[in-house]
Image 1 (cartoon, rainbow over the protein chains, first blue to last red):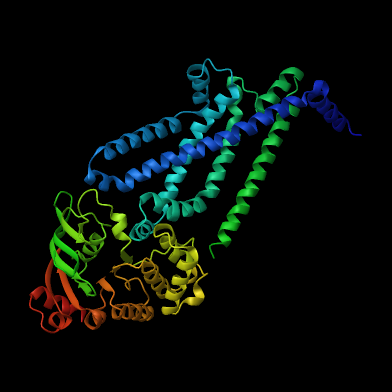
Image 2: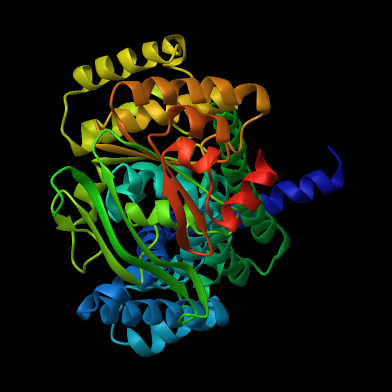
Length: 244
Length: 247
């Protein structure tokens, strides 16, 4: 057997097999997956809410102002809160947000994974909100008018007419946001959360060999991203078909 | 209120930019049951704005629109209830592209009037038959021609059993050879006694089907009367000039 192959094999054994070091990888992978999934759920809920508030405000400002009352001021206030949220969370690096969450806001918490989920969820929500908002705004106003003219109220028009079209249009973009989120969670190690990246990093610290653990986790990320990308393109093809 | 006025419009105004632009500048008219009111006029005359005000797709700045005994232009009116009885047909059809034709027609009756699905579908299929499109029930809007889409849009509005149908330039976006099929459906509808308000450039339709023609310019009603009064003996210079251009 060639020398380099032999070297690769002993390197592999040193980094992953000895002392069950592979467990750093699996434990990290588990956390990465958990953080990504739950952050994505928070992101979608938050994003949809923010997008709903902002588009409702934009589309009904005139009516609400005419009818007067508290509703208009409540919506104006909520709209501004949403704007500030979007501006802050899209205007600062996610690592900084994560550290502020971990060392300031949740300083007393020992649940690193939980804090990471909340941080990435809130951050992702800002991007998802703009994806949803863009999706809603891209629907022809005639669709709103047709829904309203049939007698649906604003919310019913949204739910029955507009949002199904929005979901269809933005699904690929939304899944791409989840892929970005998956990769972004690799900074969780900054606050001591043992994610996949951190797992590889820990092995490197013990074995003093960089190649095997780092390339190893890179491959794992790559495979996950490729699987998701494949899923996105399959969904895209399906959606195109139903449009014929 | 006038006994047989279905919609009573008084002093209707729509201003933009604090009155700098006056799309509607005081409209008074009654739309009676069974009437086919055709609104004509040059572009920018406010005729579409007027029509869209009738179901509050445009919010009036001033004035009243009494429909079913209630001023729907007033504050805090549940306009959705009234819109169920005021069908609207748009220039660009506005069918829901993600639903089949049948679903386009049944979604509002089933969700809003709580009509059972089977019953709503039966009504829809009957209506489709009347416009000769019963075989397209399961098609999607993108598979239809413009004329077919507009006929579907008309029967979609009819599924809600409205008291009045508003048409906003229903044939303006159609290829010339498809205008006829849509006008035919509208003529048939007029014969059944449906109250219709139609904004159109089709003078032939206005003359043949209209029970009253309203000529608008600069946000006001300049002249109104029977088709023969309007087309054969126009009084104002504005109307004469307009007819000279379009006829």
